[in-house]
Length: 325
View 1 (cartoon, rainbow, N blue to C red):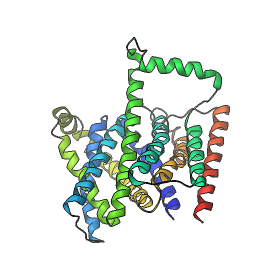
View 2: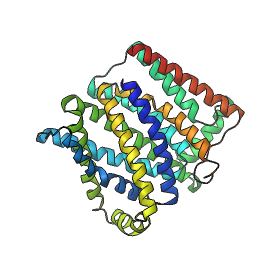
View 3: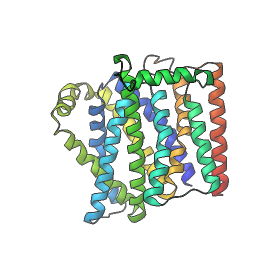
View 4: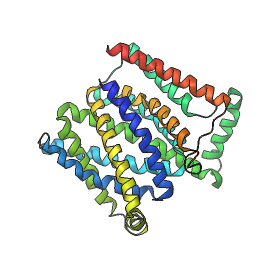
């Protein structure tokens, strides 16, 4: 059951990420401001308590609020990375690292372990996700990759060339976002083992709501949120687009949280390769209309590589499905 829920969540999220990229590129040119707008509406989740009223004790509330703060921090780094590059470059980086971080954190803090079949499926899903996301994988380009790495991060005795500093920031923001994503889902998994699902979900969202108010305490962020972007984002057309995307994102987020509450965190996060397949298909349909916002490179060898990645993901899914049956 959790496998189907997770797949549906990743399908919706693929569309959400394309929408987020469009807004960040065309409507709101600030990842901080966009994270603020996303987080401030977390308060609306309080109405879900009507379905299952529940109040946490002080210790539970503290953990819930911490989870919400971690998620808000994740959004800031995630939107920074998404704003710096196309979605098909950022999502694969984060998608490849989140399951690895989740596996480590889940093992250390939750004691989660994988069976041999699950571990093999986990590795196949990650490899498939990497193949379907990167653009080319020729072995003779290894030296070019090494030279590129040195250009981006700098040599031990020299600084980083200004041309590659944006790439370095993209990589750093993507890695930090991936770690925070994993930390959040491991913590929320712990919450769901000790609290009811709706209660734990709602009170953790209150942590994000508190966090957006803390963002206003930073002068530069406050100016960026209230002065530079409030006018553009408040236009009726932009508000309709924003709320439509956020409604889909909220639904996908609830589904993914539900999957995490009943499944293995590392395995669920390793399924992000499926999200990339959906993302790739969506972008193929939309790139003709929005070529400057949504970019995707595709050639014969790249297409073969993506098909190989998709086949590996299908194999990994089949192994998980058989293991759960």
